[in-house]
Length: 536
Ligand code: ATP
Image (cartoon, protein in one colour):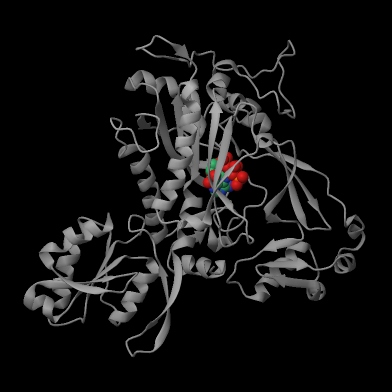
């Protein structure tokens, strides 16, 4: 598997991803998508939306589904009524508790659902500092010294391990940290905080004006369930989808975009009859896993991890994570791409009645003057009446919840490859190529005149104009044609179209395939049809 540093460097060099606010030193956990990255991520979201929502045929039972179903979409606000987060449980329960073990250098977080401390595998503890892979060691040292609050003369105590600078041994730590080192081998005091970002509505800014940036898009769907039903006259089973930004004040954002503080989710809340919910849960698990495979992730790096009964929330009969073997994970470890959860009627009921999960122990639930929890629901009836059978019930919900950034990162990791190819002079050179699924590739076709004379640029620009109407296309006439091919390989462009002397005589062009490197000639009039077919 390729080293992650190579991908990180490529992403910066070719404009897939930049650190947010980089000119001011960056902001940890926040990432900007560059010119190629924005197209890639838009394609990931568009493929998801098309395959789950827009392209879904509600008249036909899809393979593996218990029956037909309808799908529709929503786009809700990021800031919602604060009561939403009280009834959803996020206000009281979406806390992270963190302790660091100074001896093993492991960080543990408290898992609310399992009720115990679990190792935060993708997080190293406080005596480490993150550095960019392409930074010079001197830079790493400068930052590490600052991070550990050390004097320059202590620099020799630092050890470098991949992209970490660490204080290596207990003795070293004792030497450098002085009296603090007495605590080595113990756990630090647990620290607790809510993962929701707070903000203030209006000019006065009192406690009552506190609002939160949503930590998930799902709640916007639940609180609009009735609106969607009433306005669309849709019948169950049906799913409501949403793509949008979510925010979590993660303890240690890490691993490139994998754990960010601002990220995008692609979520579906699928509403069905309680008796049918198990079948729909199985369907969505398999459907979603297949989608990642169809988009190019290899089966041997994907797993479906069913949660054990002890890990499940009391209302859930099943949750499965779709996980991918990211290159920054240790051998045999996987990172979550998507969770598919059977949520029963928990969410709709909470927004009706304000119930809290009795299994979890809220840190501090606000009480009213009668000593009862203040978290009343909306009081609105969110049940569903089947107009054919007359039955009235609170629907059960299956939730496939995916991260657009994590999926994009997985597609980048999967696509990255290197091979040896001869250059123009026949000398073997390492070629870096991003082998994206054609639907995801940021640029679909690049058009080149072979040389910048004899009418070739004019013809190539004409073809460029024709293609640009239909697909994302790039025009390039700079440098030798071999160099131009390499640049497009690094951008993951599936097809390069070259206009040469014969093009002018016969009105044909050559197409070069990114992966097989095969070249063939087609009539210019057939080019759009040929590319469209190959890209679909
Ligand atoms: P994790 O255990 O990795 O923190 P989670 O179980 O809290 O994830 P969910 O609440 O199920 O995640 O969110 C659904 C999806 O949203 C995840 O599968 C992931 O793809 C994405 N996601 C969640 N948190 C982040 C984050 N901090 N950065 C990027 N994507 C995220």
